[in-house]
Each structure stands twice: as C-alpha cells, then as structure tokens.
Length: 237
Image (cartoon, rainbow, N blue to C red; front, side, top):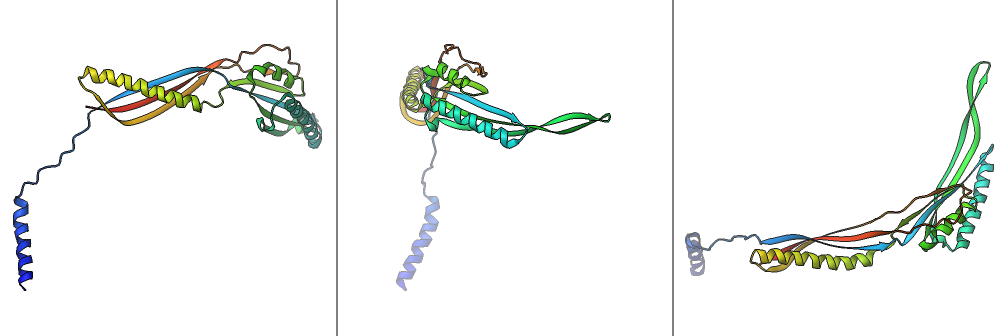
C-alpha cells in the first residue's frame, strides 16, 4: 500500500513540475552552401559507322518477287561478311510486301485491278573500321543493293572517357567554389550533393548511292565532342 502511494505522489509531482522546467528549444539551422557547375570535355574521332543497304524486286506473283529478294539479300550479306563484317553487326532493318493498283478503262468507265507485287528488304550494317567506309560503300553498291545509305559516323562506347571527364568536372566545380568561398571570406566544407549531366555530339555525312555507285570517293570520318557536366553543392564554413 505504501509503495502505491509513493508512486502516485511521484506522478503528481512530475505533472506539476515538468511543465514549469525550461527544457530549451530545438532550432534547425539551415546549412550555408554554394552551388557551382563544373564541366569537362574532349574531342574524339568517330569510332564506328553504319550503313543501310536494301534490295527489291517486282513480279506478277508475290512468291516470285520474294524469292528474288531473298536471293539478292543472301548474296549481299555474303559479300558483306567476306568484307570482314561480323554476323552480330548485320541486322535486318525492314521487310515489306506491296501490291500495286492498276487503272484501266472499260466501256468508258475507269476501273482498277490488282497489279504487280513489289517486295523489298534492307539490313543495317555496323562498320567498326571506320577508315574503310568508302570501300564498304563501293562494295554495297556493286553487290546487288538497290539503295545504299551511309556512312553514318558516330561514337560507340564513351563510358571510360566520361568517367575520366566526371573527375575533371568535379575538380573544375571545386576550383570555382573555392573562388566564391574566398571572395566571401569563407572556406569550403563537405560536398552536400552532386547532380550529373553528360552529352556527346558529332557531325557526319549521310550519302545515298544507287547500284552504279563506286568510284572510291574518299570519306572524312570526322570527330565529335564528349562532355561531362556536374552541379555540386558545397558546404560553406
């Protein structure tokens, strides 16, 4: 009984006393910071080129046109592989069947009827030895291709380069932030956040050639810019 009374007395004491005690106040102070952008970029020679090569055929029967296209495409792919292009760098791009409509007059009335079948197919070819682009264009034009588009010069893999550029962009951002901090009579603290951005741009020619093609015209591989940008927030001390 005495223990129960003691507990009740302590509870009442706490209810009376705690509201009167000064526990202080919790204040969240915003971190003072500086936000800067860093950038790094480099110019690279284009690494690969791509071509589109197509064949087509016209016949009264769809199967006849399809067989002709298949035969032409097999010969084209064989020639491309003989040039040194691997199978994984040859991809079917399109296949189409189309039957034309023919108009004719019958007793002064214009009518229409089904005409011939046109079948076409094309493949996309990736060339990793970009200096051989002109030779591949000539080969495609003389290997049964009805239309050849290319070369489309571009980058392949820039991941390692962009990792290096990321480090340089961070250094660039830090140097800028230190200038701002000194101007304010402060010092840089820890990095609060980093936002990454990147980009790559190149300019390349796009040619169209018919069956005659050829001539070994020189082609410029060209180059492009790979860039890395970061937005960094630094703590100010």
